[in-house]
Image (cartoon, rainbow, N blue to C red):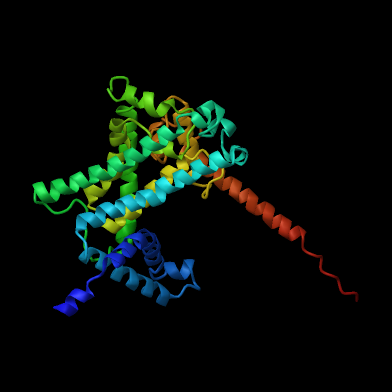
Length: 354
């Protein structure tokens, strides 16, 4: 008995597992995807399968220990909170600090210049309401975590059903993760379009005035604006379209947290207001459409990615297909120019005299 008790993880071990969990969550499932036969050969021919196997083994041991030594609800709630903090709140805070500390440099990176600075003159300066927007945005994120907790308590404690999300020591298969992510993001796209257009911008909806008097009073977007709204519009437009796909398809908790990390990063960059983003082919177009919606009084661009707006004809400015085509052409032109520059820099071969 003493040996069994001593084998249990200490409080320090549990704290370390909780801190390391978001990092392992993002790194190891991606390694698993790249470890698929053929895919790893095509994408990373120099990558060793032994290191991937060891990473997955360590992650499995970490995950199993975390599940077996903690209540499932605790793992879900703390993991969800950690993902939102790591992939949304901290980056949004970093962007806000960057804009406030280096306004001259930030102005050059913003799509709308000084007008887009959270602490700029047009936003009320340093005594403006940027702090209120950040505080309400953070409160809404916490509200979403609280609602997710309430759903789990409803399922498991009151209705005595299985948990809303699948929580087990078994790791999801890579293809299962990919399929769940694709259908989850697509369903989120549909739900966000319907709720945004018909619940928040329809003249007969009671939520329209709330949404317009909160989020649409911001003159230019920055990261905290993504979750800044009255709590009711936030639940309808942000929380439910994000959470309902995971609930409907009953995501594995690891898949849900990976899905939530993608959504959090999309929110962060789409509302950042910067014209220089990590992925010009995807994020730049999303960011431009969000800006046009916010600064165009909500007359179009209702979906997150712009796909449903393209299908229904509610795109403002360039639609998603035009954005992708333009970005692809620009990337092709840049590659051709680089190729010509390299060829132009080559020294001509000396001809041998006969």
